[in-house]
Amino acid sequence: MEEYKSFVVTIQVLPKSEDSGSVVHWTLEYDKLHDEIAHLETLLQFIQDISKDINVRLSQVR
Image 1 (cartoon, helix red, strand yellow):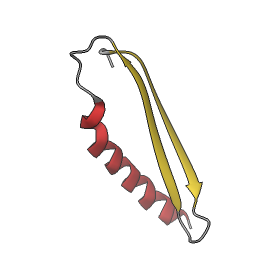
Image 2 (cartoon, rainbow, N blue to C red):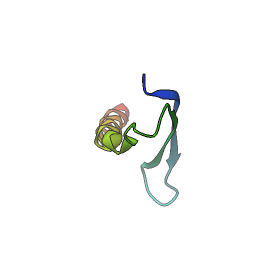
Image 3 (spheres, rainbow, N blue to C red):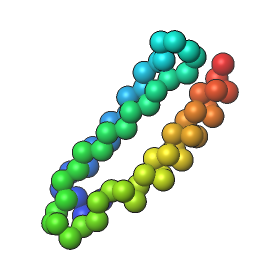
Image 4 (tube, helix red, strand yellow):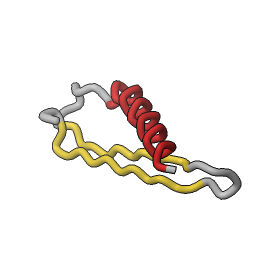
């Protein structure tokens, strides 16, 4: 986080209309301090793992 002026994560979960389950949209908005800082593609696996964990937990709630 020291490499960014700002960093905002928005997670939107919408129920599927035709089936059970939901669709999750992740939005990452950030402002890098300088151009040499890597893009956030390195976080994609982390986000995928979190999404899978959320899915497991929500499936257990039923």
